[in-house]
Image (cartoon, rainbow, N blue to C red; front, side, top):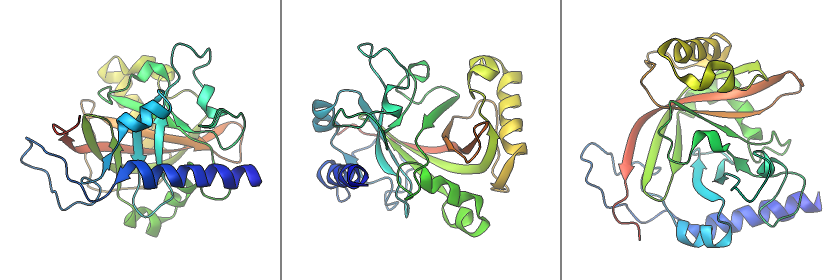
Length: 237
């Protein structure tokens, strides 16, 4: 418990030190609602990357504990899932970090980027995702924001589903064809605990999937979200 507390405090310090809620991006885009609190956050990636160069993005869901850097293991680390069981201070064990695999790249331009995090009982990391299986909570928590040094992405949550523990990209051959993309979308949505009616989904849209554990070794809980807006940060230095 001491380790959990120290790690949670470390993440809180990161949020306070490197995320600025008051500064707006300079943008050439014209369709952005700059009064959206999620779009006017600014992350100091230069300082974050100096602290740990595997940090390349930040994920945020308003009114939840999900407000964390995203890491991806560099070539100096043997394992794709290195950050699953390592903390930012280099220690091994829980709670780990939020991370992606190298196959997805770092620009969120692929059809679907799978983002992993532990299901912590105290609702930290991706433990809070399970609340999205409740209809009222799902309805009131609609958006996910991804911040990178150059772009802020706004995603609308499509559904929250319990699926098998099969790799959600490799199982569909990396989403290389329209058929494989549609099969992925159909599978995740057919297993939805909650879904957002009226939100269209297509094979040429852009998605993220937030993935965490369940109480079963053969299942995972995932949240699928579609990119609905993005903001170019021409102000970043």
